[in-house]
Length: 89
Image (cartoon, rainbow, N blue to C red; front, side, top):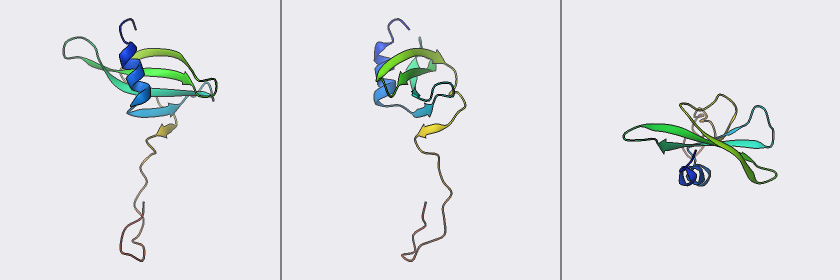
């Protein structure tokens, strides 16, 4: 991860997804895109302890790990129109 400090900070400040860790209830996994060489992009994952407020580790990965998504909230199906005629989410 040498030379990827800015990418790790960006993952925490502007993630594309945040998941709960399956192995540590206090840990959150922050995902963002990271440029790796000329024209190659991977994901950077930053594992941070949300209770003790420190970064545990950061690594490059090809995909987001399966697990409960904290942010953005999973999309819900649209409900029937309310009395104003707008559909609810």
